[in-house]
Amino acid sequence: MHPMLNIAVKAARRAGQIINRASLDLELVQVSKKQHNDFVTEVDKASEAAIIDTLKTAYPDHAILAEESGRSDNESEYQWIVDPLDGTTNFIHGFQYYCVSIALTHKGIVTQAVVYDPTRNDLFTASRGRGAFLNDRRIRVGRRDRLADALIGTGFPFREKDSLERYTDLFADMTRACAGLRRPGAAALDLANVAAGRMDGFFEQGLSPWDVAAGALLVTESGGLIGNYTGDSDYLHVGEVVAGNPKLYAQMVPILSKYTRINAA
Image 1: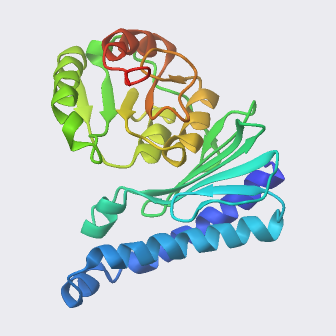
Image 2: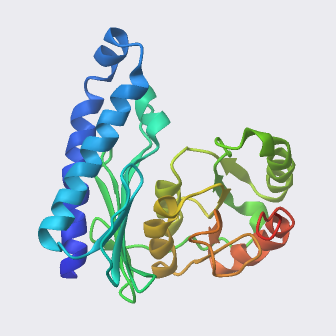
C-alpha cells in the first residue's frame, strides 16, 4: 500500500472509532438533549480533529480542505480533502449509512482515496493507476449495460429547497429510465458502492468537493466513469456528478444534461 494511503487509512480508522463510540450513546444523548445537532457537530469535529492530527503528524507541510474547518493556509502541491462524517443526518437518527471520506490531490488530481464505513467496517481504498479495493479485495463496477435494468443511487438537494421542483422532474425522468432509484443519504458511500458494483450508477447535484473526491477515484479505478451532468470530466468543483460503468454513464448523461446547473447563472 502506498505510504500516503496508509496514513489516510490510519486517519479514517481513528475517526471511525470516534463515530462508532458516539453511536452507542445516541439514544441517551437524544433523550437528555433536545439539541442533537450540537451532539453530532461534536462528533463531526472530533472525527475531523483526529483525521487532521494524523495527517499533519505524517505530512506537516501538506494543505488540507476539510468540511468543518475549511481550507488550511499552507501552500502545497499536496492537498487532503476530508469529510469527517458524510451522512450526518443519518447518523443523528441511528440510520446506519454514513462514512468517513479522505482523498489526497497532487497538483489538483486525486491520487489517493479512502472511504470508510465504520458500521460495517468496510474499507474502500484506491491509489491512482493501481485499482480500487474493498477490504483488500479488488472491486469492479457492475456489468449491467442497460439503464432499464440498473439500480441507480441519488441524493435530494437538501440545501437548495427552491430547486426541488426541477429536481422532481429529473427524479421522474430517471425513475422511468432505470430499474430502481435509491437515496441512502451519503454521497461518498454511494460512490464507493458504485465502485463495488452494489449500485450500478449514481447522480447528484449540490455536492461539495469533500463529498466526491475520494469516491470519484474509487469509481475510475474500478473501471467506471465520473463526470458532470453534461458528461465532461470537470466535476470536483461544479457541484454535480454522474457515475457508472461506461455503458450506463453514456445512457445517463443524455437524461441529466438538460438539468445541468453549469453556465445556468
